[in-house]
Image (cartoon, rainbow, N blue to C red):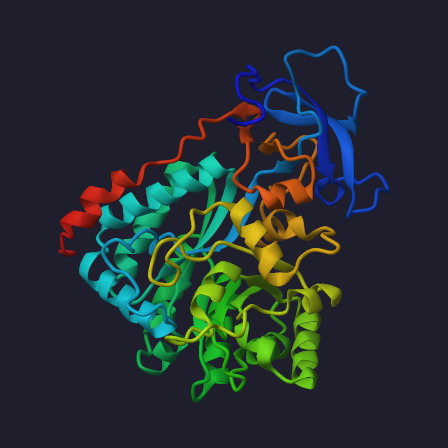
Length: 441
């Protein structure tokens, strides 16, 4: 039962006695961005009309009294894989390793990823995210021929169907080593991404001619006015430094679009001088970083019969200190790359806090799942902004400690100022498509 259950609040009214993070207010009014403020919020016709000191608003009904409960904007999930989601029941990771995941997903994609299969699993994932309070998602889409001709049309259909509930962005995903094998592929996939208003992406590896292939990807994006989003250095091998190569390419070509790099795990095992060199380049080029702490903890430093020693996450504290934009996100959900998850950004933020020590002080780290990913997606979301839709998540928890200690505690979700049905889809909804295992025709 959420804090606003049974209130009758429907598009217009006052949310009283709320606790609001100052960093999420579009106008902080001189407040310390790391502080929590006692505020009232006025919602009129589905939009946030006013935010004022707590106890100052009277006379408008209906109203909600949160008794100091937290209010956050709806969440923004910058890095997911909706096309892979929920295949675990039919294709588990045999050993929990990265290579085990890569092989298992590749086999499942070839055998089963029809339009109907993708649509059912993506719909299920979106229902989960929506019920938990997410308003925007960027998903990477496996674009290995011939899968891209199936997946991208399904993605465009889902984006249209969910418009107004969840804003969707798509990123093409392929190993950059493919460019050494198929001379026509890059132009073809870049055109497909451009036609779908998507983002260019690739998985980078330390391969011969890496810089040439990176430049080709950059130029394909530049020619079409596309942003870039890479999977980078998802390993704890200290010899892997493709993040630095990406930054050097961006600097050399004077790329003026947005660049996001995900994972960047190997940076955590580099020498201090190498780390400084890479971080300086990131700051100079404006490259943003998204960490996927749950997935990285699951896959990295896994050796059978041995307790893991290293966390496998990247250096968010050091990046933030240099002014580099940083976010955290869900990544995979119930597939061979991560066996768990539910596209719940409260879980992501909670686990990120524990894994990455985003506390003592907690500060404004909540921006990693709200304002920062919204800015990187170039959308109006993730902030308590006057005149914007009242897309809010209301909690029974009154401060960060209560929220992080009980992330599954009471919450209510308002979209355009109206309470939504937060019933999560039952896993049984996927039984038919997963158990029938009808091969892709």
